Image 1 (tube, rainbow, N blue to C red):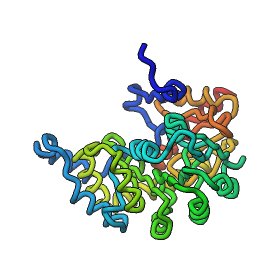
Image 2 (image 1 turned 180 degrees about the horizontal axis):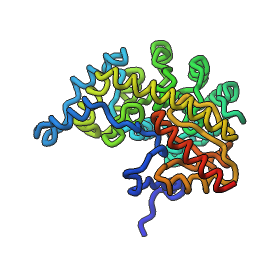
Image 3 (image 1 turned 30 degrees about the horizontal axis):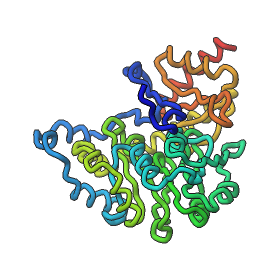
Length: 349
């Protein structure tokens, strides 16, 4: 057997589901449950042979996205989903032994990338109520090569105050702020980039914008950092259709606003309904909710799957023993989920 690098041997493998999700209520990966904007679908219907047969040209697309975020084209890098942006950042800046500060629990890819590049991982655990541990994160950031902040955080749904991000950036060499769910808490660290040149934002079109299947993300930072990231990035990892659909989606402001507002209302209804059922529910500012079911969490997740509803058992995560993470779709979908949970609770109890 040909042996891989030592860090590859040591890192766990992430195996995404390859089938079994079609025709179900998919509340397990925090996707847009209504689907993409009709204008994005129109782009696909009108795709030309040239869009498929030639390599992408990025200039006009970069100009559009830069104007959308109010930055210069030198501030952005398009990537094949946020996951690629994260890997490029680690591949560019992290040497073996560098201190990387990670919030816990959080998105598993940060841990995997830290292991892959041999980082010295310093975990800072969320408070028991899943609020962001501001002072402990600021303290841990001192002298760190990279601090990761996820706002709002996955899987807790917790938001991070902007002044906390600024304080962390004042201590660390580099701060990665993942804003995959920022449309749902309507907060962004973009204004901080004017003063703090060591912050990298990552954005995705897989959540609010309904384009997970096309794989499009962005890194947004200072021109110096973006220029360095481009040395590592693949030159053609983002395809023409993904960019065209994303542009059409951002132009469809009413569709996105309606969907985000619908999710926020559904989230409030879901949290209220879960509390009425006697479950311990944590407040969320994302498009998902964490609910402490207890020792029967795995049984609840399995029973929901039997009813065609997919959620994630997060019991293995720090602070989340007995917890299920449920995506928030529309108000009708939230009612469907609550009705199913009531049935399951009666059966199990």
